[in-house]
Image 1 (cartoon, helix red, strand yellow):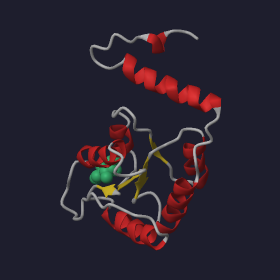
Image 2: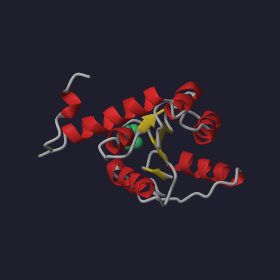
Image 3: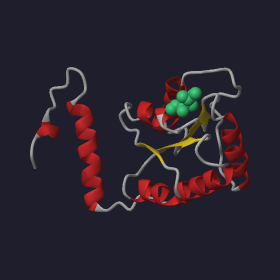
Length: 157
Ligand code: RB5
C-alpha cells in the first residue's frame, strides 16, 4: 500500500481491513498530510510488485488518477483506477491489473473496502484473447520506448 498526502486516511483504513482479512501488508507511506509527489510513491509501490516483494499494489490519493498514469509508464505494471465493483472485477479478470489506484475524495471507505476485496480475490481469467491483448500492450511499450528497434506494435495483424 502507498498513498500521497490526499489518501493517507483511506490507506490506513484499508491496511486495518486487510490485516483483519489476513493479508500481509507493507505500508510504503506517505503517512502525513505534508504534500508529496504521487509519482515518487507510485514508483515505490510499482517496484514492490516488480521485485516480487508484493503480489499487488494499492495506492490511495485524492482522485485515484495520477498514480495510475504514473505507474503505467513502468513496464510490467498494469495500473487501473476502479471506483466501482464491476471495474475492479474486470480489471483483474480481463486485464490482470497489478496496481489499483483509489481516490479518497471520490469514494468512501465502505465502497473502497468492497472494491479492494473484489480486486484481491479475483484472479486473471487467463483467456487466450486477453493474454494476446496484454502481450500487445507490452509490445506497444517496447515500440514506443526511446531508442527501441522494436516497432512491431504498429504492424497490422
Ligand atoms: C493531490 O492534491 C492530488 O492531486 C492527488 O492526490 C491526486 O488526486 C492525483 O491524481
